[in-house]
Amino acid sequence: LFMEPKLRERFIESEVEKQVHATLSHERRVLEGEHAQSMQQLSAS
Image (spheres, helix red, strand yellow):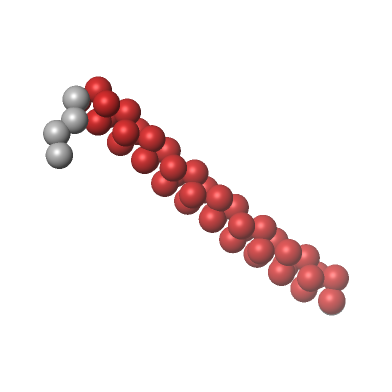
């Protein structure tokens, strides 16, 4: 598959951006879950 270099570069940047966004969203959900758990443990004690 041959693409013009600039077009290919833009495509790669777009894909990387999507991956970064997905990773950050996942990490945020994990952290929010951990925070909620620790708050529940604190309120239970």
